[in-house]
Length: 74
Image (tube, rainbow, N blue to C red; front, side, top):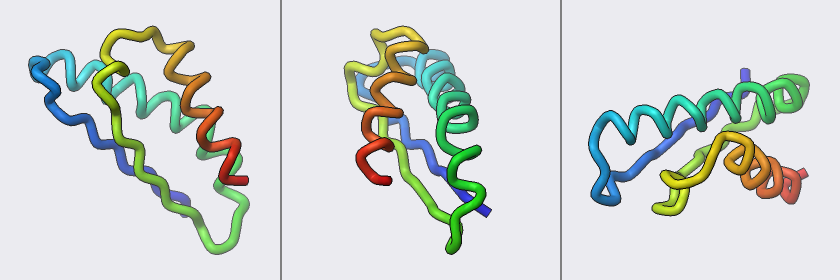
């Protein structure tokens, strides 16, 4: 099945902030990429690495940016 990895570097933030960002990114991947990727053969894998600016944006902006990047892969 399709798999996704999420990397959230410290960038000077606390563990609470990093976990919050990781949860938000996990949800964006789950709702925006996994439904599309599940039908593909061979199952795709993706690695999402947060940039420092990701800490300061809301969930809708994260989703827009992620889907913009993934849309270029299809």
